[in-house]
Each structure stands twice: as C-alpha cells, then as structure tokens.
Amino acid sequence: MDLSAIPLVDQHAHNLLRPESARDFAYPSAFTEGYAAEVVTRHVQETIFFRRSMREIAELLGCEPRLEAILEARERLGFEEVARRCFAAAGFEVILLDDGFMPDRVMPTEWHNRFAQVRRLLRVEFLAEQLIGALSSWEAFEEAFRAALHTPDPEVVGFKTIVAYRTGLAIAPPDPEAVRTAFQAMRQQAERGERIRLAHKPLNDWVVWQTLEAATHLRLPVQFHTGFGDPDLDLRWANPLHLRPLLEHPGFRRVPFVLLHASYPYTREAGYLAAVYPHVYVDLGLAIPFLSQTGMAFAVRAFLELTPISKILFSTDAHLIPELFYLGARWGRRILGEILEETVRAGDLTVTEAEDAAEAILRRNARALYAL
Ligand SMILES: [Zn+2]
Image 1 (spheres, rainbow, N blue to C red):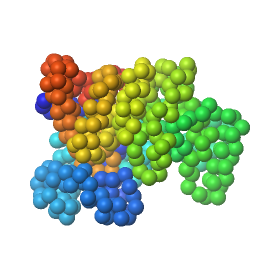
Image 2 (image 1 turned 180 degrees about the vertical axis):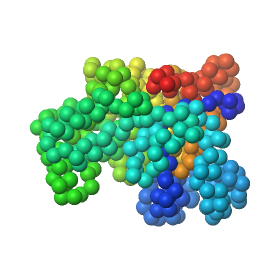
Image 3 (image 1 turned 45 degrees about the vertical axis):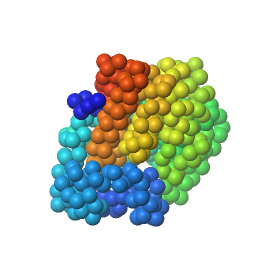
C-alpha cells in the first residue's frame, strides 16, 4: 500500500542542532541513544539501523553509501540544503516540537516553520529547572510554575514529561513536606553553582501532578516518555504499566495520556492500556526508524493486535539532524503500508478500512487530539 500521498503529522520531534553545535557531535551519535565513546565510534555502526540508513541517506544526498562520503556530501551541500532535501522528501504537514531538549544548542522553534507548520510541546522538567534556578523560595517557585503551566504560549499544544528518565513512572501523590525538602536540596545545588537537574522523586512527581492538573484545566494532552532511551534511563521504571494509579485517578480522567516511543520493548503493554482506558494513546516514534524492519513491524503489529486505530499516533522523535525526519517519515509510511496490507490479506480489514486506518494513524488522529 503506497502511503506517499498522505501528508504527515509528526506528533513528537525535536529541534535541529545548530550547524556550529553539530561540530561537537560525531555524526554516528545521532543513530544511537547510547553515548559511551565505544558505542558512538564503533558499535553503532554495527546496527541494522545505521547500515540501512547510510544507504538511504546516500541516495538522498547523491553520494556513495559510506560514512565518509556522506560527511563530505553534507559539507558540500551545506546545512540548509541538507535540511531542505530531507524535509521535502519527508512530506510533513505539521510537526510538534519538544524544544526543551538541548535548548541552548538547537535552532529556534520558529525557524522550522519553513518545512511545515510547527507547534510546541512544553517540556515540564525543563521549565521547572529554569524556575528553580531563578527563584529561591518555595512559595515563589510554586506560584511561578503553576502560572507558567496554566498560561502557556499559544503555540503550545501539549505537555511533555521525561519523568521516566529521572525518577521513573511509578508516580506517587506528592507529600508536601518531602516536596519542599527536595526543592531545598536543589536550591542548595543551584547556590553552589552546580547544574540543576530535576531528579528528586518527590519533586519530580509533584511536577507531573501539577502538569496533569493544568492539562485537565486546559484540555491539553500530556506526552510521557516511556520505554527505551539513553542510559540515563532505568528501563525497569519506564514501563507504562507503572502509570496505572494516575490512569485510574478520577481527577485525571479527562487528560489524554500519550505514551511515546511505542513504549518499546513494552509495546504490547502500552497497546493494552490504550485499549482499556479511554484517555490513553500510543505513539510509534523512535521505534520507527531506530529498529530493524522486523522491529518496526513488531511495533505496528503489536498495536494493531488490540489497540483501537483511533488511538495510534505517528511520530519520528527526530532530533539533532534532519536525516532522522526523513528516515522516520519514509519508514513510518512504508512499514504501516506493509502491515496494513497484511491485515487486508488476513481478512482483518477491508481495503477501504486499511486506507482509512493509514490516514488516521499518520495524520487524522493527531489533528483531532491536539486540535490542529
Ligand atoms: Zn523525544
């Protein structure tokens, strides 16, 4: 099934690195979530994702399918032209950018409007870290954080939390005493001039709780990082099944919970949650395009086993380099087309239903969820 005519809504991605910051990064590091030197210089090049992507990028840039030739072609074409080619080949209608990832090293969010309509996802841990750095009293922080969540920039269409990375998805109702103590500990770090990193469980849980309250009020979805990521993450606590108490909480029933990254490898678990809770959605990003074709097909099949088609969302989770937007778009359409064909052959869907499912997953579901 050829899905190239469907314009994509990429419901979760990140800003491109500025060309001057890109010099600090080895190109292969964009193809792995690992950051150990041996992973970036050696092991990543042994992955199927890297091997396959070198050929596809070389074809797009018109060079030999070797790392050195690609680096040379990127240098020759220049940052803007490489980005233009990637986005033109990808075919996005809307892109939602979480612009709280390496904020001082990336291109401004508005800059990306040349490629598609861009809307923002507010990364709540980044907001909290900025305010903790600026405000010394708990009362001032609490008020400023709540105010920022409740009156976000009009371009913000959803919140994003990386609590899975920091203290895990087993989020507890905040205990005011413990939250204040955690805040004081972070302020002491700030006063010692250390980098502020929100990783004190009571305060992280409080931040998520405040976010869910604001999201209820504003009727905005909340994206949760779930499943695999870089080794900062304890994968055991990134299983979306830990979210059950929040999903069952009567106060948060109207908040759409978006489980990112196919929750890989907990993909079936995520699909199950989206099947039984009306307010849970699942996303294919990072699983597409970082896995082998078998892995990407697994994620799409695992969702279609049980999850309503209206709950499945497409994204690239592209970051750092424009090539990841291209690869995510290419493989999103291709794998989805292949698996939907399979469902038609099996008699699970009619051709018309499969075509409609493709349009829903690649575009319509996200447009409805974020009121785009
Ligand atoms: Zn992301």
